Image (tube, rainbow, N blue to C red; front, side, top):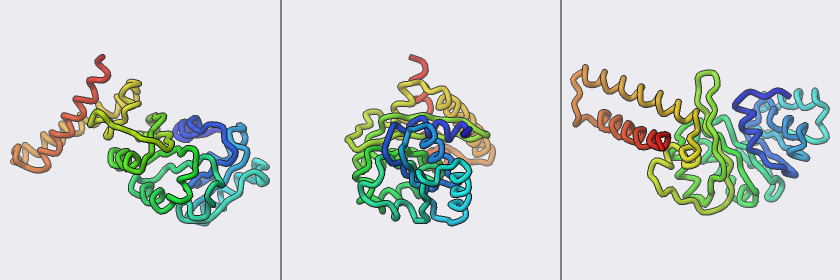
Length: 231
């Protein structure tokens, strides 16, 4: 199976496991790939909507994997039993929704060895949530595809200390690895902030304006993050 750049990066984070659970599976591509590549012996493809599950089931059958991958219609991990999966993938949804799924599924996820997570919004807040919930980020990546940036991470149970404030916003491992896609993101974000600031000043806003202050703080964080690429 040929995966998109984003899905391939997610799949590359999955370590060999007995059972993989994919939350919000959509077309079922991740479970199919993981089983075909013998990364997972079995998989459970889950989605809150029946339509995507029908598509996933069709793809699973097309690859002859009905005996290895099952589909379940459920909200989050509500249809997953404690201890049933070694690895859980939650990808392609907003950070706030992912927090909700992980909070409501705490009893199930507490026994999972690792989670592969790809939040599409509120990334800094999501990293803080992970730390508060005693998750530690073991691996991070960021992909640029079709004009969008996609951060992703592999997490396990453990303590995580963010010694630099910008680690929460941009990712300690991404910064220390000088991730080239994060660098692109920082450069784009800086230009966006500068353009917005310029428009605000032209419209009569000054440094006392709340939005101006917010943008300046963001630019300062970007500047601090970019210093990692200068070492």
